Image (cartoon, rainbow, N blue to C red; front, side, top):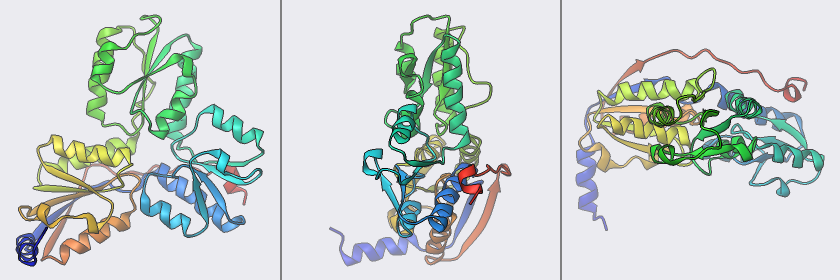
Length: 325
């Protein structure tokens, strides 16, 4: 139990001048912006409620904000009334989910990120060509479940180097790999290296599966971590890409923490930190970063620098069901 004296001493240790190094790019990517715009548009043009299967993106503030405007988030389609409007989240769904929606006459609007849809297309193409697909990703993640559902009999989940060393396939000469789009690039590369050693004929995607935004944010946070005493990453606990940013910073030897909002920043973390790196996962709103900066500013003077590693200019078009409204 903390006494008043303990709290005050930690407050005193946490106050003082600081340099904040803002990773750029950070926060929303084009796929997340597209998904949120889809739900936002439907809430404006259709009678509530608008149902969304799973979280539209993995961020609590985004989800709560849309709930407050009439969006209803459900785990399964069985919770959606027949004929209602339902949005598929940015993480994609398996064909069985689409078939169920069609059978029940649901008015489907698909917010699947185009880069996730690309992985689904690649899975079908590889299996059609006679390959076993090794999907590198995390069990239970909605994106992984959707991709596995495309060709379940010929797709095997590989979660780690350990899995890669032991996975068995039908024909070692006809093997391909694909990746969850939100992986840490360096760890995924280690898994691919083991697979290539075991299966010399291994094929991969025509272009990198790990999305541009994930890669860009990892490069930026790595550079920021190298010049910081502490890294704070804005994002929700169930956000894979946000958790990977924390891990990337930690692999640079820098203390790093994931925070959903400014209230989760601990004074204990700040006591020894005079240079703090700040980033945000691709599903985290920029306003959370602004609030963290404001909270740090309340503890003393801050100097804000930005470390930009690249500029993002990608935009994705909305689905026709939204464009036609």
